Image 1 (cartoon, rainbow, N blue to C red):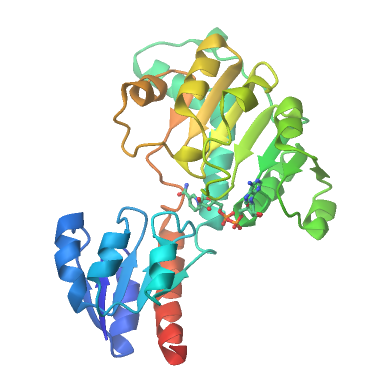
Image 2 (image 1 turned 30 degrees about the vertical axis):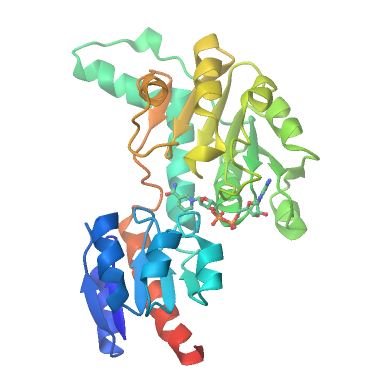
Length: 308
Ligand code: NAD
């Protein structure tokens, strides 16, 4: 079986697959056009989020039997086209949970204490002690939209900071709600109206695309903050920029954007605002997560071929 790894994955995946008898090619910088040509020779395609597995790629993959996605979101894979072509899709949903949750905590602390701005200021030779009066997470309400693996992991960590947790999800795990003494909101509007900080952890789907539009953002508490480490398309960039400019929102922290890297003038405007903290989609970028993901994808591929 021939495997093409088209995005950067820890070499543990390659060594485990080779040890199991797979012939593996790594081409981490392959372009969409090159992939369209190369894919015809492979039984398995492994990607992260960079490579878009479109209908065209799937149709060109005449031998393709399996697509492995190292990570959680399957929004870069045309699942319908894969199903029609009888190609199985496997992912590694557990790998990024802790990594993303810890990044969200870092963002939350930076938002309330302006660590990034204080660091920048002192490097310019300034000593602006009076400028940097922040606020505390202690006693604040954290709204968690999407209470799956990552949402729950963030809530657990926020609980240790003595925050109150308010949750909105289409299905809610009552046992975890109870364990964290978290409250369930009836609607997403209720979460944004009552929270000091809102963190988004829903998958990208038609129902969640621009879920945070100008209407929902207008319902936020004045001076609240928004964190998005889910998918850029869940938040309407223009609506968010307007809310930050008007002071409706005090700040935002974004690990994901509608275009990565940002290209639209509106997005460039957003990422340059001082009250916006941005990171280049690094939620899963910890050494630990990379190792877990590489081992998990290799095992999932090996197991899938036992049942295919
Ligand atoms: P998950 O599937 O465990 O949780 C998602 C939750 O969202 C589920 O509980 C689901 O019921 C809920 N949900 C779905 N539709 C909803 C809606 N319309 N309204 C409210 N809730 C809804 O997934 P996860 O592992 O927690 O990951 C969440 C998302 O985070 C992923 O889908 C991915 O897009 C993103 N992610 C980002 C990074 C990063 O690098 N920043 C890394 C991993 C995952």
